[in-house]
Amino acid sequence: SDVIPKKGNGWKGKEAFLFEIDFWPKSITFKTVISPGNEEVRSKLSEIIGKIKGAKQPLGTVWLVHLTEKCKYDVTNPHNTPEQTEKKVLAIWPKISEIVHIVENEIIKNFNYIGNG
Image 1: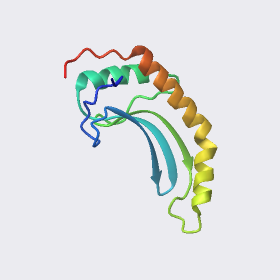
Image 2: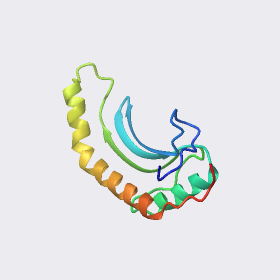
Image 3: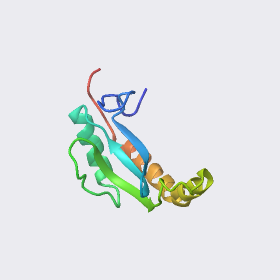
Image 4: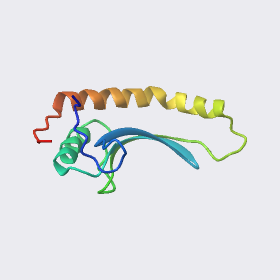
């Protein structure tokens, strides 16, 4: 069974939490994202992730982002090759991997949802 129940309202799979890598015009951004949905699930996830070193108070109230890793990169530059983009992502990959590992461990250790279907 899933550690986190699928009670979200933002993604096709009803996930309540995902890791995202966004390619913006001037940057590549990795982030932890809690989706809108079941408030008990959201608050438990927010509490767990919010205690991780480096976590920030989310700016929004719908999509909750606590941890980010960002690098400047002009994704829209037509001279940038897919290989250059991959190299840029790989440069921040150790930090992304570290965040994923820490967040996964904290969720597995601390997430305890007692709701029904």
